[in-house]
Length: 341
Ligand SMILES: Nc1ncnc2c1ncn2[C@@H]1O[C@H](COP(=O)(O)OP(=O)(O)OP(=O)(O)O)[C@@H](O)[C@H]1O
Ligand SMILES: [Mg+2]
Image (cartoon, rainbow, N blue to C red; front, top):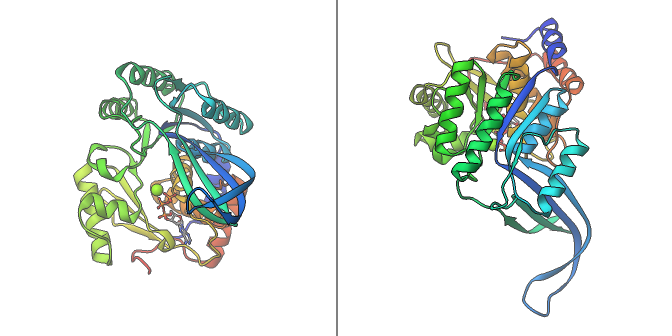
């Protein structure tokens, strides 16, 4: 199937007007850039002379940044601590025009901060500060309260699970129940080790490693891909599973339909970090704009194609997306019945 130019216009015109709730593990990405010209006298390690620092929204917050870039309104639900990192995080949200109203503050938890020290363009070390325990019952109740407040006003929900403790077993159960009863589209970017908790959701977006791990079969061949995609669909009773396959594009599995494979275009790839966040954000945004799942996957693939061509976790706007989709239409390959390698 190829997406027509008229349909691209229709979908992209309708995008950018939805409220999308993002629930998950929020992170602050910190980068220290510098140079090295000596080894420390204290230990056999390089001494980095720091020249600049920058902060970016990470984890679930990067999904929110992607939703925001598309013109939709992200309602970001997650926890931050009562610390410097939380202040920096709120400032970043403010700069991007993303509301911090749905955040829950918990003084017993650290705001997750991942610090990368980069010298002469090479990462020297990463230092993580985080709390990985499950939320306390009290904190979880506050989080669920925020979700219930928002539920009447949203077209879709995205779970961005990095296994840091926000999406507890009981919260997940309650969220799934809520979405099912209110018919809210629920998309999950999964943590592979707890895959089997994501039951009866609208969409799950593992990459091929995560999907293979979850099903217990490595994806090496087309037969593996089909077995894993169809098998997970069946096991999890999901409406659809989108397996992202890096440079090979993505494969969409749906109940009652043949799988659809969407290749990427050869392009200069600068940085694939955050491509998964763009995929899920763009997919849900397209669904909210009336796209069917195959159309949404085509849109998401184009979105990811734009972000991998940029350095650093990047986001994509609707205009850029429209251009990329038009370019894809011209090149004539959008989806196929066979995976292409
Ligand atoms: N090298 C590449 N060339 C072109 N497109 C790519 C490349 N890598 C990734 N993509 C696009 O990004 C999508 C998601 O990439 P991938 O499968 O690596 O997800 P991921 O591992 O979840 O990423 P993340 O690191 O963000 O978690 C792919 O389906 C594809 O559309
Ligand atoms: Mg991912």
